[in-house]
Image (cartoon, rainbow, N blue to C red; front, top):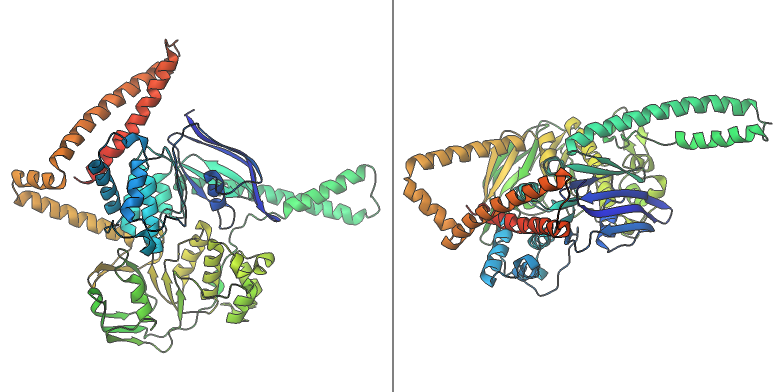
Length: 597
């Protein structure tokens, strides 16, 4: 068993009569990289807030190891007004005991490197002026620079573009930091995590493996539960027959059987069928052969060019993903298509049968004082399915995990995930034949995402999707519009993983060509231009020191494993902990320098 960093014991939390989790117990050990998954509204973020101390449980204990350095990334970070981006991050690295011997230049270089890696290229900008996505990046930079031993992340990939998500994925998978996080990014879970904790039915289920392993084992668990439920229901049928034949039996031995019957009835009411949302049944409007044409579209904001003489003819049933760094104009592009933002020149020629369904980052402008059911009824009072069956708004909402009680909630009380689910329901209930989805994966749980993907794969219409979720893009798009900035859009004929492989091969070919064309002396000169002389020497020194410390740690591991009596065991154990701390610090610095090579 490894070193225990965190122990959660019999933790219970409810809101009113709604139980999130009941008496859950789990631990986090050094080296764990744990992903927490669950449906929206079952307590993922609440659990993290309890662990961070910002919210109290109803009962139970949360115990961290003494002197453990813990870093916490919130979904909605806050900063002291008036500070610049670099000041926020410099304070984090300055207060780290591991860096107290370093000069200001070295600390500033750490900050600059981290900000650049996260796409923050204006360190002197005030945090007061940043967008939500930029604030998330600053918060991420701050918590990574603090170099915690245990890192707790709440939706770290939200609002990040794909290149930054991949950098973070690579950073965390290589880092020695112990990790506990909530995320819906399935590639991220699969490539970073070595354990999965699922919150389900007010309990937790732990799986030792990555996300792919979890999916397989979870399916086995669900099938076993469904088999047990079938047995319970079969027994219940026999007991119901007995109850109907023995209405007078209400005393003595019969009382025990009657009580057992009601217990059985309650157990039989549990649902393990997760296909609650099935929007595939909703009939989309007919879409004709003419969809839309973009003719010589131009758009700029000052010196910033969004589109420059863009031309394209959209085909029936086409599904395209739009990717590009934050700020290149992805959202502006789809707003222009719908007439929400005017182009500077050119025209959009939209087919007469096209009915847009727009799922935006901003969400729906629904009145906070209205109830969920009333807001949906205002949109339509009649939902037509593919087979001609009609649904009421209440029946339709139930398929989006809104129980009758949830439908009576006021919109102002909904969680972020519930709002996104309501937005999705409101978008699909209008029977669009051309879906425009701007970051639809933010705040949606994995179960809802899988069903949305299934819906889009069977959708009898067109779709444009902006997303940083690589799994989502791989699942649904036929091709990609790659917005490279400065008005350049390239059409790639494949999904995101195919695009990444193409880029890797392209860069590999370019590198090989460069090496064959340039002499070795020039290559060495270019390398030294990236790393200063001082940094090159530091990297060489760190490599040697890490090798020595790793060898010493391995030797101590062998001593501990031998079972022999250890003289001065307290001193040896203290040295072992010291080595791990020093290794963490030096390996983190080595990673930073190696990124610049």
